[in-house]
Length: 218
Image (cartoon, rainbow, N blue to C red):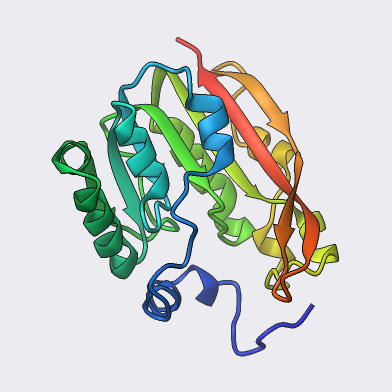
């Protein structure tokens, strides 16, 4: 795998990196909600949700369209401006159900207000910060609420999918689960499913996700 040696794992978590990435193109992501989110939430009654690392807002907008009130967090103000604009384009009802806040997830603290659902898709911070972040995500879930964390599996580094070669940033489903107190959580899914994706050359490759989905006891 090729790697830009001017980058390091910390740079890949920075506001500057993500602002530049979003500024480089009108759309970084597909605009569709993440499939693991749709699969797990399609039949769950709406409430208050926290979308951590919301990017251009596709997941938050999908949740809002199903009646959720959603707070989206992201390190990039450029992404948040784009997310807010897309929510407005989806209609006043969606815009009213979404709010956006800039934050660095490496230093983010769990809010005093807890949520019915907390979601974090493909948020990759150095291992020294990861377990703390996952515990703070869990702490933001109210009793009876749900937590969904999805990430890239370390085995993706053996494919040609084009991941930056920083093994420290990737994690397994078991590593997510290790951050949760088993007395507080019922783990519904701890899995590493595969899916097809296109590599930078446009060829189909098989990649693997790390998925943790659970309900907070109480």
